[in-house]
Image 1 (cartoon, rainbow, N blue to C red):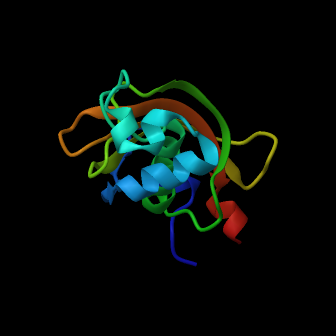
Image 2 (cartoon, rainbow, N blue to C red):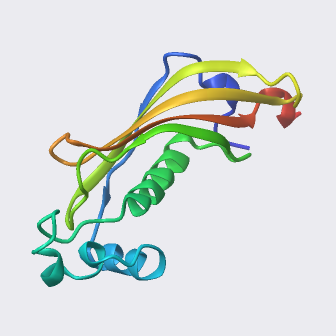
Length: 150
């Protein structure tokens, strides 16, 4: 089995994802299904909004960031989210933005209740092509250790 496990993420590990382009179509499609507000649904109607144009839902940004996280971490056994803190969307995501994720492992320990698993604390920061932060949060997650691979 190729990929990573808990022991591959000691405290201080930093990872950078590939980039992902956000399209107008993806913004509108996500909004139609999950966050149907005018500044996510129509470029024309969004012009007069507080945001001054079409922007992605924060939840769309979170979903895209999760995809970048999963791809970058490369844990075939899966990463189980335990909680998210301090979720922020300081700048909007607009059509054509190129998103990338910066991951930092801030804590790591073996699980006391689940042998074969470790728990990490991560700081994730999603940035656009201008290095503006569009999302940040801290999270705890559980992932398989080498012991679980035996």
